[in-house]
Amino acid sequence: MKNFRFLIIPFILAISSCGWFKSPPEIGKVLAEHFKNKMYKDFDTTAYDSVFVETMNELSPGFINPKTIKAFYAVNNDAPELVTRFYINGELDSLNSYLENSTVHGLNPKVFKTEEIKNLLSQLGENNFKKVEDSYPVIARLEILSANAYLNYTNFLKYGVVNPRNIFSRYYIKVRRPDSAGMVRLLSTDHLLDSLKSAQPKSPQYKALQTAYLNTDIASEKRILLLNMERFRWQMPATGNNFVQVNIPDFKLTWFDDQDTVISMKVCVGGRRESGYEEKLKAFAKSGSLDDKPKNHETPLLFSKINSIQANPIWNIPVSIAQSEIYWMARKDPYYLSNSNIKVYYKDKLIGEPDTINWNKYSREKLPFKFKQGSGGGNALGKFKFIFDNSSSIYLHDTNNKNGFNLSNRAISHGCVRIEKPLDFAEKLVGDTYTYDKLRAEVDLPPVDSTHNKWYKKRMAAKADTLKAFQLKPAWFSPKKSVPLLITYFTAWSENNKIEYRPDVYDMDEKLWMAMRKFR
Image 1 (cartoon, rainbow, N blue to C red):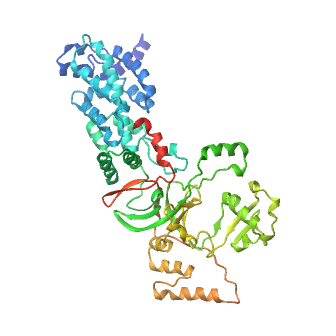
Image 2 (image 1 turned 90 degrees about the horizontal axis):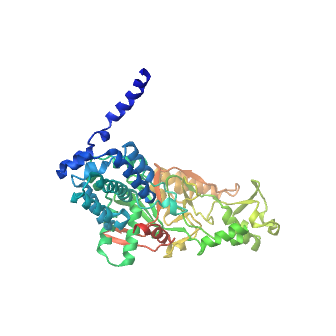
Image 3 (image 1 turned 120 degrees about the vertical axis):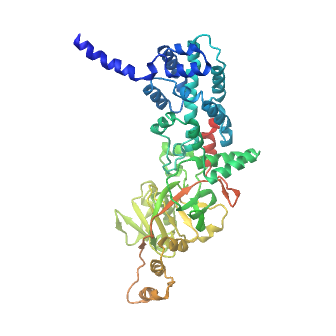
């Protein structure tokens, strides 16, 4: 008997500590007082719970975050938390109004079950239930659908409808996504209306696109505006007020400092992938032949920080370029390598006479050589290389082919970003005349400050010394501070109170449009 007493006490304490099991529970008190209907004082939590569980099992397979919603209600003993707190004060009606008005964000109210929630609110408001148990399915369904719609709506506006990393193969920006802890906080709020207001996107760019979206009836324009509104909903890493952005469709680099532009210039980016890329990739996977490998030089989307500048860079030629281009040029012209200042390495040892290599002995699939192009005017990277950490071996660089900047479609590189004004960009990065003049001397340019002429004259004298062979080598410089870099993709944005549109150079709009189709 003594042991039984100790077993029952914790159970009694647990039951008595939970308001949900009081008679009547909070929902019963709230509805009884609101409707002046004593029937709700007979609200049976056990009977309601079985209806709630059945309703949750029916609805949750169609939810985006079923586990989080189930976990929240498990902790709260399946009590109708939202209906209890927000039905009487009208905030559930406000929620439904926000859902109905989601068209201003390019969303379809049907995805939130807006009409059903509206009907359930109406049924509860009519107060025509003959028995209290008749209200259980309405309350349970209203609770669960409201919770799901509330989470989806706020998540869509705060983080975007889709995760770009799930649909784009070269999207390496770590965008923030909703997490379970944040969603539980949303469901636990005491101020539903405030949460809905705070979820509204506030960036000037988003608002400008949204205004244009609401002011046009042209379907093609609405589509582009909607897609770029979605891009501005994605939670990018914090860049601060001072950062560099490369927008691929605009073929432009812009350095922002707050709202001001520090510098802006044209860029050339990676060429778009071959048409029919996916099918060709499948064929390549089967054959393994490089002849079947489709080309994909698209510049990846990424976030990093520019941490160093290399003057007179060496180009470590990627294997893919060696196989697809260098191999064929060397076979065609035995002097191509030496004329192009390209050194060849076998097992990391320099081959003294690369022009004597018999290329017929080697297949390009199993090419045993590495290739490096030395510093100098003919180097494909030009005179400057701007380096930042990333997993794709991508960097910004100068180019010895300036004609590309005159093209309207500048998606022509192998993936790296060629910049139009590398010297100006380097000047802004180093941030002081002393370092900048040392950098200029490395590329045979006179100093800006005449008191630094000594460096320049010393270098020019070394180059002119016929007794000693002058060897051009890379020189490294550090920016005054690391500058955030964002390589991104916008086909519409606001500039000088006008919406700018650019072609969808990588067909990313089409892919995003398809991913968003069930939410539009």
